[in-house]
Image 1 (cartoon, rainbow over the protein chains, first blue to last red):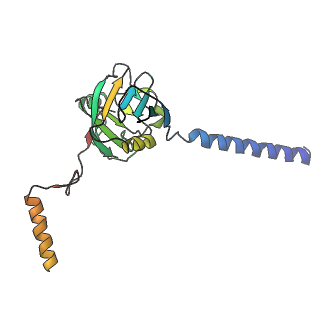
Image 2: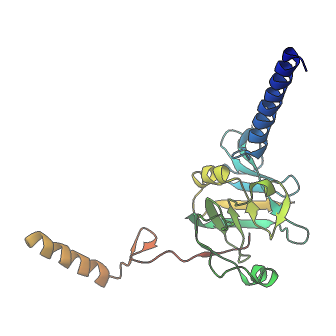
Image 3: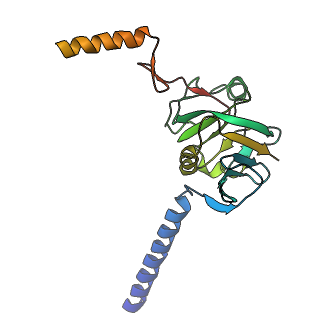
Length: 178
Length: 38
């Protein structure tokens, strides 16, 4: 092989390596926040609205707009509708599986420390009234956000739940629709 | 010494009045885990 050919092969190999390295970095980086501001009417400002089929959560703003976030919602047979309110705000809470979850996953520990990779609440949890043991929370599985994946909770990117956390309070109404 | 005495009196009065939390966090206790689905 000529020296010029070897030079070309080396350059080509380096280029290929650089392209695959950059591609792998971008592919591995999960989307951390996805808030958008959109037109939205029909609900009082300050209300949280979940549109299950859309897999989107809206926080209603005063000027006919809302923040819109992607959410994971209940999988088949686990979704629900209704009007509730936020009855607790928790940053990186310890988490205990309720009976239904424990029954399905008996190997789950009774308590998972907050902030650990095993804790499904992620960065924060907003618990909901109504007795259904539902919450709007972060996640330890970011690529599940936007899917029909949960037991009926609403799963957000950690950056998004931190953002929503700052806009709501105990008593904020939450409307869950189809 | 006097300051310490005042602190002790205030703390005892605080606890005696049934004030066992600062904000929503119980004094000396870890918050209970949330029990929710996910």
